[in-house]
Amino acid sequence: MSKYTEKVLAKLRAKNPCEDEFIQAATEVIESLEPVFERNPEYEKAGLLERFIEPERVLSFRVPWVDDTGNVHVNRGFRVQFNSVIGPYKGGLRLHPSVNQGIIKFLGFEQILKNSLTGLPIGGGKGGSDFDPKGKSDNEVMRFCQSFMTELFKYIGAYVDVPAGDIGVGGREIGYLYGQYRRLTNVNSGVLTGKGLSYGGSLVRTEATGYGLVYLMAEMLKVNGKEIEGKKVVISGSGNVAIYAHEKATQLGAKVVAMSDSSGYIYDEAGIDLSTIKQLKEVERKRIVEYTKYHPEAKFVEGCNGVWHIPCDVALPCATQNELDEASAKVLVKNGCIAVGEGANMPTTLEGTNVFLENGVLFAPGKAANAGGVAVSALEMTQNSMRYSWTFAEVDNRLKRIMHTIFNQIDEAAKEYGVEGNYVVGANIAGFKKVAGAMMAQGIV
Image 1: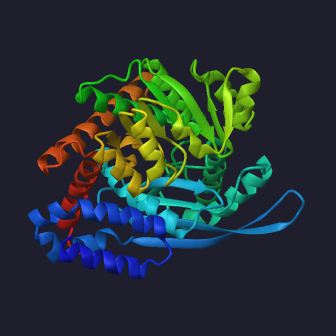
Image 2: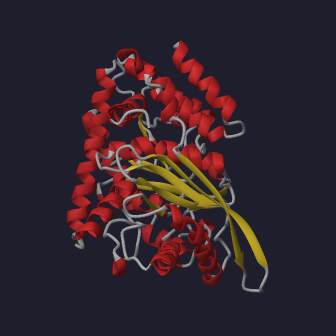
Image 3: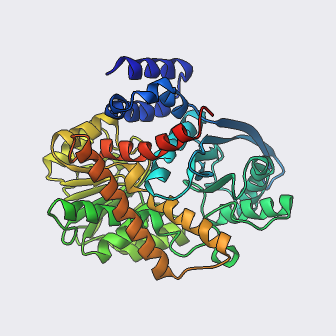
């Protein structure tokens, strides 16, 4: 490690104690960017790295709301506006008890590079709250969202910051948030993405992250002389990303044999029936164990980490950060896995990632592999600006082209910097170069 990056990392750790996820993400990126700084010594003189890892703005605020029995609750809300050098801040809102400032900073930091890779003019940001929508009534969720937006609306706008959904934030929550924004500002604009089709949403937005993940995986396999058709796939999670990764993988001829949720996983050797999963998760909002009632030949196992013990050709972690550790990575390698694509944000630990890279497993990092969601969000912004809507096929084709372009970018960057096949380094360098160029052009800001 160079003295410059070592110094920057030491300051980062000292200034951000207890923010483990943010430090993990920043460390992985900074270490991989060393050759870029060696080729561009002017970056160090301009303090580019120090500015790159420091958010432009961190917002923290209280969110009081009243439940159905009249009790008052107070949650904490966050919005990290990390980098706007190539466009307005863009990134989702996460509602989950695990949310804290460090997690939001990690997600916002990753979003900078992810958004850059799409080739679209959007910067990086992220937000959310430690509110848990599970088990809450629609009215309770509505009251929380209205209170959250009553503070957040001061800092966002169609040309400033455009939030979207993430874990715990789907169409229902986006609707309540948008309704409150419109009520407070008297403005109809593209300030949020993931909106309903009746008020400015885009077709394919629901499917985008899962579809995009599989489009990139198919391109990665093809470039490396393989095909996704006929491959056995294991997917962690059973939410939006996992469901539509399953759908697209199946359409392309693969067979998904396992999916999971926080309680455990199901294994169906004949292939997971997607219609059952959609009914359980999108309609009934039930646990995945219920799948066995419809398909008694399937097997349910408590504990979601065990899903990686199922032999597969392709693994798609689509649940949450650091779910795939070193031990699980070794099991996947031992069982013959040839490719891993991150559908979630940083679902693989640094140690797990190294196992894959050291054993020649094709590995697509989240900032590239799951960029489909934000890509279609940006396409939704474009349609809102045009006051126009594209067809499903038009958006889907644009998404496919974007994901193929992302893979080609990271493949070329890896080759250019002498690490062919290392798509982690390739993604970091390809995403950073565009941001760095814009930062240098705009001066010390």
